[in-house]
Length: 391
Image 1 (cartoon, rainbow, N blue to C red):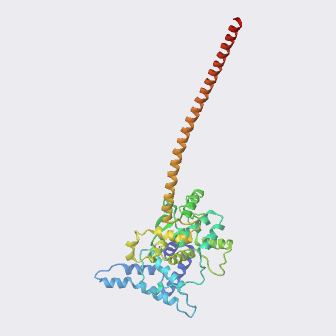
Image 2: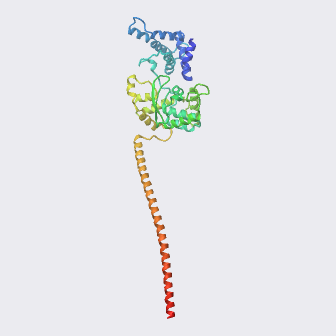
């Protein structure tokens, strides 16, 4: 496979915006290192291939060679050169990620040391600070089902745009479960475990969306072709919704990543454990913590977060659920008692009705007997009068 095909195959696995940045990073690295990409991949493969009579230390040093090379490249990026200004910290990190990710794509991963300068980032002052009130406003002005679903999913998950757009319909959890529904998925970019929940709003929209838009395309957010929509389409739609909702973003950038920043910052404000936050949004968690996090009930953290970020209605807390259950039982008991009392009343009414009918019948019989008695009395009086007259 040629160097161009190797790169294009890798870049085809990421989103459009990420693709542009990674392509630029790979181009710059090849220029700086003065070697083509196929040679670079070949060297990395050779560095990872065990050699006879080589000590463990020697093998490890050879395997770490490219980590040091990429750190040197990172230093070169953030240092002004004769023909260009220095790249900012975040751009330099993104360009380096392109090299790290192509190695990972071809199963030759590099694990950076904790103190690596490549891991350093700074908060961009150009990013719009998305707040729950903005999300609610954009959701309610959205008129199409897909836009509403995108907003609701972004508000629930806090995942990277690539991890959301790569969702296939067969990956979705059982939507008939009681909400919030726990969902565990491996992220596309970092290959990390993401474990969070889908809210009742998102689940309702998903059911309606899947019914309204049946398609042979496997992706949830499918395009007109065989793939999924790109991140530019999503980001453009977010900006349109913000404008319709009269949200003033000024010259700042409103992108899908703002959802991720919002989820993380709101979770921290609520005092949710840092490792649980990372698990929910699919960020790398210290490997030593993973065995402890697998049994974590993320529903508790998710419900807590939803008290602030929920789009529709309010979250029912666990203690409220117990009270509602007790009230439901009381209503059920009262309903049963009312039903029994109604049945008893019907029986009494039936008896009274029957008794009334019997009474009316007896009254009629008595009236007839009285009439007969009076008739007999009159007849006797007539006979007595006749007898007196003859005598």
